[in-house]
Length: 136
Image 1 (tube, rainbow, N blue to C red):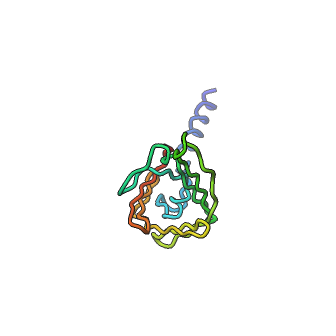
Image 2: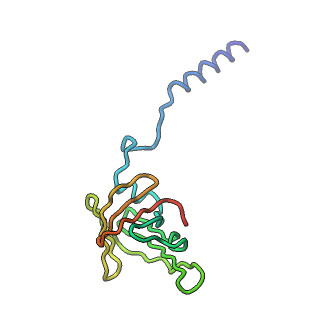
Image 3: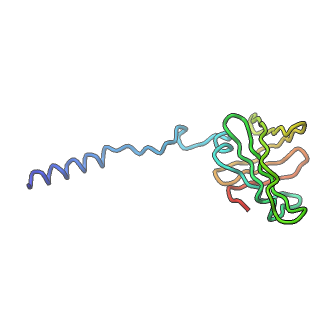
């Protein structure tokens, strides 16, 4: 019995010291702008100049790895806060320049900064828009 107990402790110790610390990060822990952009849904948080209503802060952008973007826009102009429906479109990312094609219109923005929790852009008319990962 004593030999079995010692062997079990030895195997447990061996497994403990030989386990690798995989964190599933193929890029050494530093994510690229494209990886951060497509890692989750981005919600409107604030803009300068001006601001967003509490309802508009439910609007989200989901950038997909196939260069499509799903925009779920919320408005309360005619009553309660409601989704205006999801619009699927395309986008391109070149360096820090993000271009979203919405039908015949195109929105171009410069990514000022991006992290796992915040996205800060300046659009083509000079507004600075901050997105976060929290709806509302």
